[in-house]
Image (cartoon, rainbow, N blue to C red):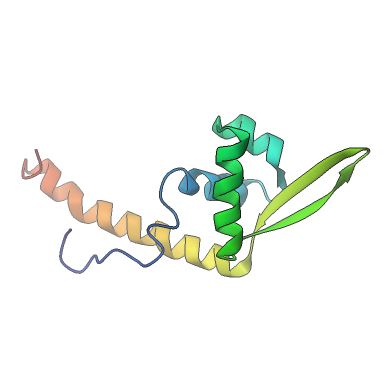
Length: 109
């Protein structure tokens, strides 16, 4: 870890694949469970577990309803979730930016 780039408390929350899930929801507010499965290639059980964790942490909100007779779950970032995700992505950018000069200099092999 580089000096001044302490890992944020939400780092574990946004670990892979939750980072991809959160990004997909940020790109497509109201995305359905089926669309998330298709886009991310996750099993129903795996995706459900990650969505539950993100919902428990109030990063996402779920709207449950029906499309005809079929259950329909749609996901959106909460305003707190958007702020936390933005802060985490900013940290990743700063952290990666600090590593690039070291990589270019050959210090990271």
